[in-house]
Length: 376
Image (cartoon, rainbow, N blue to C red; front, side, top):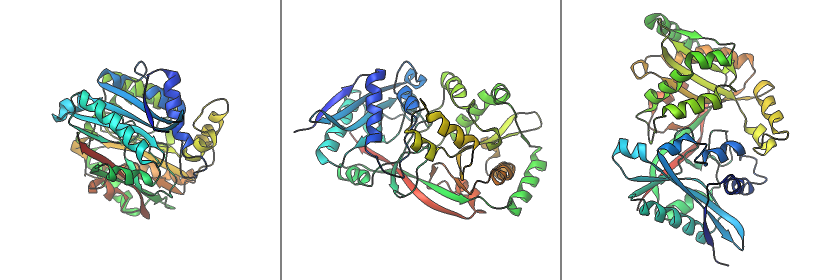
């Protein structure tokens, strides 16, 4: 039977079916980490995700013989297009079986939708903002994924090239071995930076207090630090409020470093979390009825891996050793918690200043991701 493409209505029922299709493609794959089902559904609902204040989206599903065989979402981020002076659409949340007809019809649907909206090019996979998953896996298919990244089959990039998509940017990821002690070089640099700029690291015992003191400032700092990065979509006030409530209340406090100056102004922040990868596999991405138990164990129980979710430093303090101060503060907690490895998040392949922060660790670059582009 031929492939049928159907638009997805933005209702909870249809979006849930759309999201669950992704899990079905990776049954038995030990490297795939399912996303939290509820969060993914919420991201695609206009009445839940504040990114829809400045974004438009249309999802599509491919069917053969009434059975789902692929999915994709087209996104237009008007704020980024205004900032960059472009007419760019994004594609994301893409999954498909290894079938040329399925892939071609899915992408033709999203490309036609983008043209109808006046767009002249399309890039992806990307989400509404940097808080969503981005970057198609092109290396590291035999590596365990993370909560913050996309996993996809090795045939995905082959289809992208076949359809005329080309590399726009690549991101790389690293796995570091957590050392037995803080590297001496880090300690020396941290001490110099602390004294030179009169900085200090804050340690919180209360998530509520952290949110009250620096919740807003933290996301404003991310906006400052990431503003020039590829495809960055500045977080609005509504988005900041949304993410403060969504994330800051569940973080493990000894995996967070907050750096302030003598006036208590936020200078840098590092946020890491114990890996949720195995817990999400066990729960299937569901919190209920019992999935939350696996996640709770991942946060507070035995865990070999810590995921480095983000590091943000005020632009005027970048490349001045603040990152050394940050990790000199966090590493003792990693060692105490018996983490063996630390997983970096996505880093643009040419962002050497960021990658230099790992130079004192035993490490390997184990995954690579790509954003593809095509003219419409």
